[in-house]
Amino acid sequence: MNLDARLTAALTAVVAGARRRALRDGDRQIDTAHLLHTLLESDPEVRAVFDGPQVARLLGYLVQRAIGYGLRWQSSVEDSGALPVLSEPEGWSPTAAGALDAACARAERRGHARTCGLDLLAAIVADPESRAVEVLERAGVDVRALPSRIEAAAAVEEFAGGCPESEDVGR
Image (tube, rainbow, N blue to C red):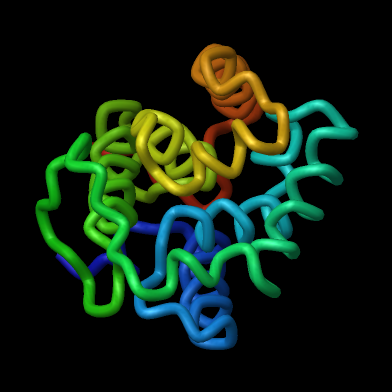
């Protein structure tokens, strides 16, 4: 199945934004830090998982990464080996591709035909060796606490009717 068909329109825009960010930054591949940066900028449910000051600190750190810190990553491939790569879209690091696949699988387990930002955030933080987790830790975020915060946000989302634009599987 086409990746775009498995994502909400909002998450498709996040993926496109991450692609543009990597191209603009001169990175060889789109990695999990690109995805995290774009998620934080565009998804209010993802931002709500973090404390207010954490979002500002994270975005500041990600901007620093984009203008210079990330140079050490430009010549390397992000592949922690923690997530299996099922289908690596062109231009994606193995870890980012694995996170996208894991996010889609998470959405399916929750009974949704389309994947939301919280699904992607959960998949990204599940890999302790990803660049996004490195960014989160360097910005002072307690990564171990994130899965429960993501689940709490997803429960609120479910109570409100699930992911926007997402249809329940089997309905």
